[in-house]
Image 1 (cartoon, rainbow, N blue to C red):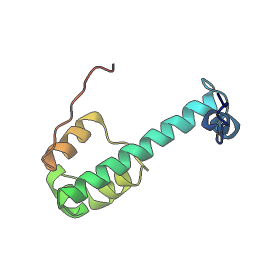
Image 2: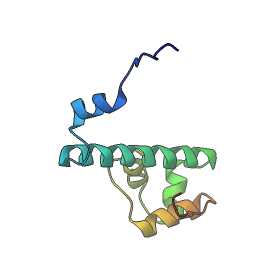
Image 3: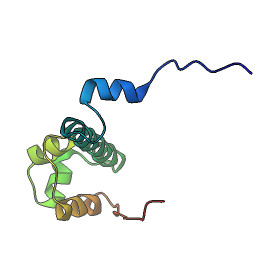
Length: 99
């Protein structure tokens, strides 16, 4: 049986760029990645709901610039604001236990 060659080691790449797993620099990078990921989810959800940033802002009682900053990952909405954003788009937030 032939041994498979590893073409790309993601773990080594992450360690080289952001430090070892568990390090402060790695935690900061992971937090930033989650912020950007969640911002993209909210942007996509707003577009799927057929809303402009202004329409969403009006529904949640915020400024259009606030919605823009959330969608760009520049700010993180509070949990209560996240629920208002979801509801304004006709969505719900569900927390489920991890497997």
